[in-house]
Length: 168
Ligand SMILES: CC(C)(COP(=O)(O)OP(=O)(O)OC[C@H]1O[C@@H](n2cnc3c(N)ncnc32)[C@H](O)[C@@H]1OP(=O)(O)O)[C@@H](O)C(=O)NCCC(=O)NCCS
Image (cartoon, rainbow, N blue to C red; front, side):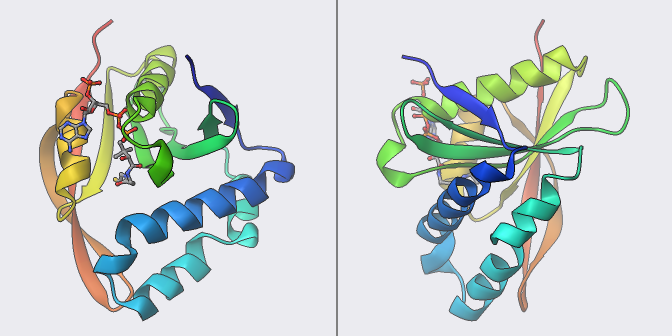
């Protein structure tokens, strides 16, 4: 079984991206955050208009993925210099599709993109109060390299920076 990946460049894919981005974000983090902060973040980041603007940015790549139906998405940021790390900004999978190996496959897809781009490493940020995602990344060989602030509504959260050196 393999996953199909579709880069979102055609606006026809935006409704699926909005649907999956909103649902996965609410399911993963809704219970832990202030409802007003959540709503403000959803209204700023996860609307048709916001995605339509972001897909115009050549350095921000969105991919839907799934087997038959779309089950998750990635946001990958391309570096402005050849050979610099590619950054994974988001990986989100619908709850019913989690734990089936799709996360590992999506991470391999991302790491292969980085290798093809000539990068020696990949980097990401993960909320420091998300032990499940930190465990997932650690299991796949990512190591913490730092911590930085992440403003979220009226709150100040923090993310761990994690990195993986790529083996060729
Ligand atoms: C985190 C997420 C992407 C993982 O995807 P997934 O499809 O559930 O993970 P997989 O089934 O592909 O697991 C891959 C491997 O990681 C391991 N793993 C998963 N979670 C783990 C954890 N918390 N600790 C240790 N290992 C873990 C699995 O056992 C599996 O190991 P194996 O391939 O060696 O057998 C997914 O659960 C998700 O979308 N969560 C909600 C959104 C989220 O938190 N995104 C990250 C925000 S930074």
